Length: 328
Image (tube, rainbow, N blue to C red; front, top):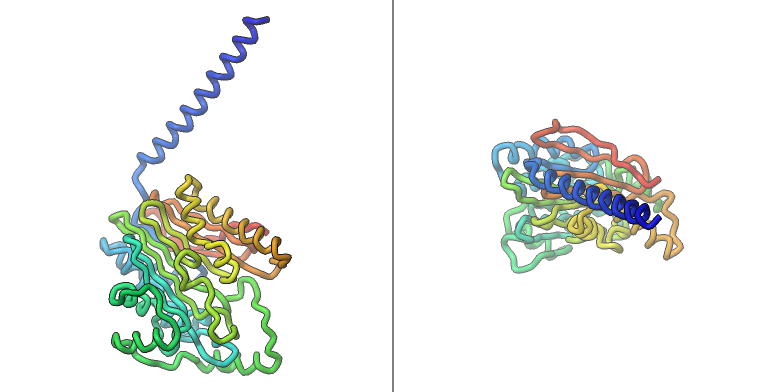
């Protein structure tokens, strides 16, 4: 009986050691495989056009920082896009205010919030990063800086957005809906051929928000975060909830601990739910989503409600949309 027990223990130990060694071997093989680069990801359907512009830079050995700026400028400059830049829906006072941030592989950051009259807030954010001792400018100060840098003052409120605002004023009912792009963002993260990461995030914020409201999009660590040793993440949806958990920093830190991008995004969404439940808040009509990219070129996403998609373009995959898995 004693010999049989020793045999079973030895067999179990041998199997355990084999399993551990097999896992280590798989991990080592995975680490030895070449990273997928260049690659770019961006949120929502307008990510297709944005990715295509970014790819022009990435595919010619350009820098990820230049690619993400160029990419998100596409929806910023499109008057038909109603949640970003020119054509963005106004706040409840009829004023279009824009938020944006950008981050490079060296942890340089720039951000603007509540910026009016400038079509491309992402480029102003980059100028803040590169030409000032600060990381964030807001409101009139951001506008004054933009004008000093040669940006042109323009009217952002289009006829379509103005008509919607006037219709909204009849009831002034403020109920943002999940997956309706009146309160969403384009976030873009990319890795260039040199293996360096950068990210950009830009939005006109929630339609008919209180004047001065700022969500997660221009906040480094909330709407965007890049760590060149680990990976990058960006967010979309209800900015207040993303801010509460420092969403994108959380995703990147989870990847640092060894989580795959999708798993890290899922954990961040779960933390949003825990936060809301703790405060007795319902999340039935609320959307929060994250996309993430690690240094291996592995990517993933996760969202609270069905309906969030993102665009991917890499040396291995043509530009296409992916439906993100969801909690509900």
